[in-house]
Length: 117
Image 1 (cartoon, one colour):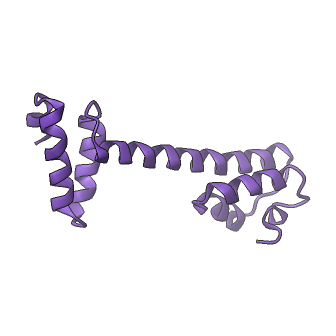
Image 2 (image 1 turned 180 degrees about the vertical axis):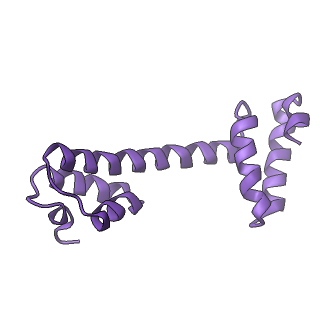
């Protein structure tokens, strides 16, 4: 389908892309379709492709923020137990990670990064 849509004008392809995404609903194939749209049809501007792009930007910012917290602790030669590392990496909230980053600058231990959490 993505091969066929590649040569289709955007005003025709965008509604088809959206219709397929809606039709797949929560079926496992929906996840695959979203990946195909993100990769193969990235030149189309549709609600779905913009949503995928937004999700990717947020995920990237969250991943970088978690890496920043760990980097600060490493630069300060603070031991980071595996449980703390996992908590930082698995956090999906950018604001919490930013708060932890500020605390990591002065926290005496890695665990103190989560003070008052």
